[in-house]
Length: 550
Image (tube, rainbow, N blue to C red; front, side):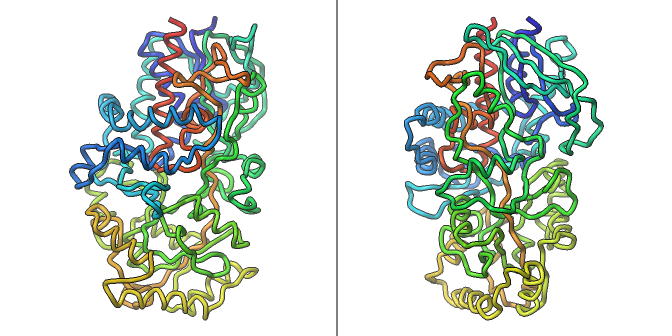
């Protein structure tokens, strides 16, 4: 044996699994097709949002949360309805209890901390038993993505210094080795070295072959979001036809290769039609990877129009129901949509996903945070996108705004009269404290929450109020991001075979395992749950593998 265990993938789930093995005194080979500069994978680039239940931060903000309420929200969102949802359902129950129990203290022991204001993501807006978070649960890591990667990377690097961890970067796994039904190692190609910056495309030129053996192999290779052909092939009919044009929320190396390789070794791959793509994507004016997109994390005030200039009905409200809105937009006949808003709204409500778009939180600077989030004006990164991003139109009048929108999309122009009518209809609803417009009601209700009132939701105002201008339109694209299905696993993260029995020696964690069980989220995410799924499933895999090889 070359090591007690091999971990394939150096993202967050892989780091957590490796850290658990190191803490148990086991030897590990950490394998990744990218260079060492990519350690941490997608988690490094993330906003660092985590789902906690009944946390101290929630209680301080006056939020009453509980396991029962969180479970109601999770199951209402997941809508499990398949025989193969048996393990995902059990994972969901275990994860909600983890989020309400030792998750925060376990992270805190490793030096992790969170921003005190709790965000309210994926608000749903339907019935109490349906999709969405009934209360704010989105806890931002102090330090964003790097802040959640760092504690586990530190343990892995210390293990490397002690001789417990071998770092095998630029090693692309092409095969899982199976002997008498037991996974005993991996084989593949050694790729030529790279000095490319983190997440940039790298060479696939091979300079040799490798074979490694171990008593346990843990696959933590991520999802399919960088492979648009695979995304389209997996696209479900319930969401309409897949877009001809999409942008990427993940680098090109998030290609889904290990899913097929694991299937060749007998693994059960379930729920591959469940996926999570955002509808508020904008093209990055300073891209790193191909078709690089950034997601707007919107507050609830912007008017949302489809590509034909028609206002979206409920659930198509900013920040309420991601896949519900995606379904509406796929019925519109256009691959793009529009936000129409004001300078006052963009200053208060626009945040951009990603650690590099949030230097105040990433740099853990209270001074910068107060300057960026509390003082007048939008954050620096948002203003940079408004000025340099090709998807932004800024104008003083509705006529100029619509002209700018049509200049961006000449093949699908919107009608000035229709856009003006819909904006004016919405604005008239603000003349009273009561309304039939559910978006107006929702943003007023949002401001009843202290956190939204402080830093997230603008004071309700008319879009055409010149004092709140200038007017802004933002062209939005579908942004590929997460696979919700994956390799079926039991609660030890051991992979289930197509015969329904666990495959000895093979584990999977993170996105490649649907964040647990082959689809812990079911059909929908409550947000702040992807990183948590990597943490929980990576921990389970590392601990189970450590016992197996002990």
